[in-house]
Length: 342
Ligand code: TLP
Image (cartoon, rainbow, N blue to C red; front, top):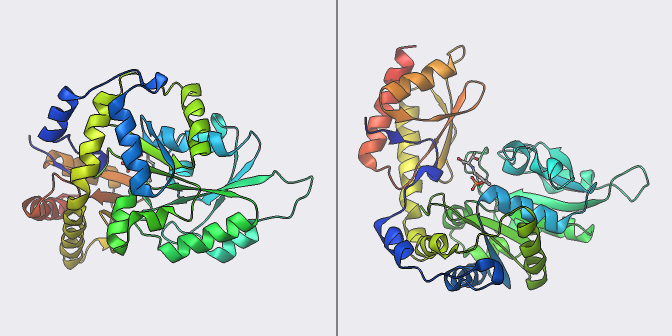
């Protein structure tokens, strides 16, 4: 059966151009810094983010972990939002592997307020861990692809910096955020010390994420990447697809946002689901009270639609390159028939 794929934009397949670039990629040993394609991808990434340097990593999870290992020592406290990907979906790696101590704050659609951050900052005292890092996420995954403005990013980063913290931005979908805000992505990255973004989500590369920051930060991050086994040798094969992703695929993300709007509006029209208004390509949806979420997801699968649970009674739809207007229409009809059969 041909499935309609709304589980995640991570499921996007590489384009023909990516596969050709991968086959033709010039490669070398990247641990020696000798892979020209990885070097080109890192240079382009740093340039796009407006940072001094960048590093290619296997995944977004690894890039966030390496950022934390580079910014923090064991026992230090990280302030982050309670639904953030780093806290919620990364196997507790910040503690298990980096030895950091998380201070999760509840946010609104993924974002904490400047007041909350201010209140969470405690004066130096031997009872408290040293707080050294603030992590932000833009767009926010569990917030339903919600977007943090340049001004809010600046405000939160300024409070953190005044208190001596560094700021890391999980920008897995930062190009979606920049598009929704109609700003250059550099403006979203400028207030933070490090930024991570994924090549393998809406941009459709088969694998890979980038961490960008100051030259000094990236030099140390390169060592931390080696520590976690992330030195990948002839990684230019993957970086070649990443270059196509950055050069060719950013310009089509607006289609995913438009399809998310269409999908949300059509679902809402039926009146049975509670649908959160999408800001980018992720839609959070709630089933009517008392309906069995697992049975609903299985019904959808049997009818050819793939979706994922996000919490009790709630699921997520993520538009991506493989979803056009036809798929949106079909998905809405499957979602309603799957609900009516419960
Ligand atoms: N998110 C995945 C799942 O892990 C939930 C998805 O399907 O959305 N930061 C953010 C904000 C993310 O959404 C993700 C992936 C990551 C980091 C991790 O990236 P990968 O999957 O490359 O490790």
